[in-house]
Every structure is written in structure tokens, then in C-alpha cells.
Amino acid sequence: MISAAVAAIAVVLVAIQSSSGEATAGSATADTAGAPHNGGHSLGGAAGPAGSSGKTEAGPQIVTDVDRTFLVKVRQAGLWEIPAGRLAQTHAQSEAVKRAGLHLIDGHSKLDQLVREDAKILGVEIPNEATPEQQGFVKQMENARGAEFDRLFANLLRASHGKIFATIGEVRAATQNDLIRRHARQANQTVLDHLEVLEDTGLVDQATFEEVEAAVKPK
Image (cartoon, rainbow, N blue to C red; front, side, top):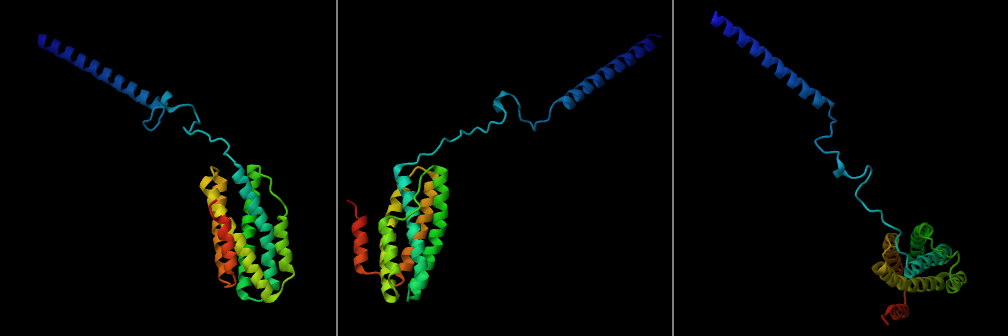
């Protein structure tokens, strides 16, 4: 009798423990299912304000007087060198001069579009006319033909490009503005190309190189 009673009590205890374990497991499963899934990363305060990327917005970039002058000079260069390139197609005798003219038309057309875009973004006023001196260069070329035109074209344009080439380096070295940096890089590549095709004409005089040297020599 005693043995039967002990056995009965044991069965009851096992049944109670089993029921308690299932309840605990069920509670844990429910808690896990109800918890938000975040890939193991806390969504607490450490993440910071919603939508924050942790980066500081940059303010407007500086536009210096040097930057403004650079944009003006690039614009004015296109206003007389594009017409000069077109004149080379009708007035030149040398095929090398005609080729140089095509490079001028292509290069300065692209630079002119870029300078108008950048000037608008940066709020820089740029001219719609070349300088009186530059207009005078175009007039000289309009009145020349053949070999006379070829030599005039090569020397006027080589002198102009040599002087601005030095200016571009100074601007790029000093500017703090990303748009001006991009513009200076493009202008540098364009002007270098023009220097080379003008020199390839074989018509640039020694006096032109000396003129450029005197203009760019450190004071």
C-alpha cells in the first residue's frame, strides 16, 4: 500500500513539472515572436535621430576675386577664339592652321558652355563681348588672307594661350572652390591641346615666345 501511494505521488510530481516546462517554453517563444527583428542591432538611442547620416552639411563654397576673374577670362577667350577658328576655315592657306582652327572651335565651345553653367551656379557675372584688344585681333585676321593670315593667326593665338596657360596654374593652386577646380582642370587640358596644334603649324615666331616669357615671368 505504501509503495503504491509513493508511486502515485511520483507520477503527479512528474506531470506538474512537465506542465510547468511547457508553459515556460511557450512564454519564451511568444516573447521571441513578438519582439521586433532588427538583425541583432539595437534600435535604441545609440542610433541617433531618425534620418541622420552622421554627416555635416557643407556650406556655400568661397568664390574669390581670382575665381571670378578666371571665369571672365575664359568667357572672353571663347568670344574671340571661336570666331578666329572659323576664320581659319575660310582665310587660311595652311592645312595645319585650318586644323588648329577646328581645335579652337571645338575646345572653346565646350569651355564656353561650362563657364556659363558655372558662372550661373556661382553667381558670377560674365561678359557677352570680347575685350577691345581681342576684337581688334579678330579684325586683323578678317583683313588677312593666305600666308599672311596663317602667320598672324598662329602668333596671336599662341601668345594668348601661353599667357592664359600660366594663369590657369595659379588659379588651380589657390582656389578653394570645387567648381573652379574642375573648370581649371578642363581649361588646362584644352589650352594645352591648343598650344600644341598652334606650334605644329611651324609658324610661331621667336618674338612670340619672348612676349609670353616676359608676361609670365615672376615679378
